Image (cartoon, rainbow, N blue to C red; front, side):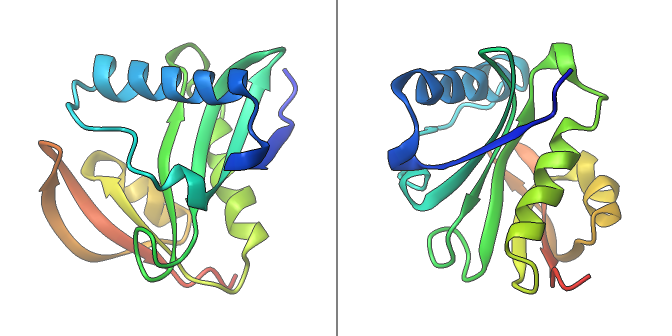
Length: 147
């Protein structure tokens, strides 16, 4: 399986890529995790979209939101992997790539509580929480991103 990461701004996304992003986010967050939320939060337009495809199928994704739109720092959000491709390190590869792209600049996340130790392993530490967001326990976590 090729692990090439595709990075694009919102305006560079094709219609097909945007459709796949919204489709996979709906499948994971709404259908699988049963989160009822409005996905179109207007932060996509201020983000760099990190994607891994198998052939033409989107299998892992995250967005890196510019400072000032979610938090005062850069934010990593909407991290997900298609259920059929989990446990292969794809999300980790995307997170590490995003962190490397802005090395030396802090990154903040609002991570689901069950992933706390996972994010700690990537250099994040808890700065707030736990708290409930979208009916799921979360922690706000920060990485100084200088390693």
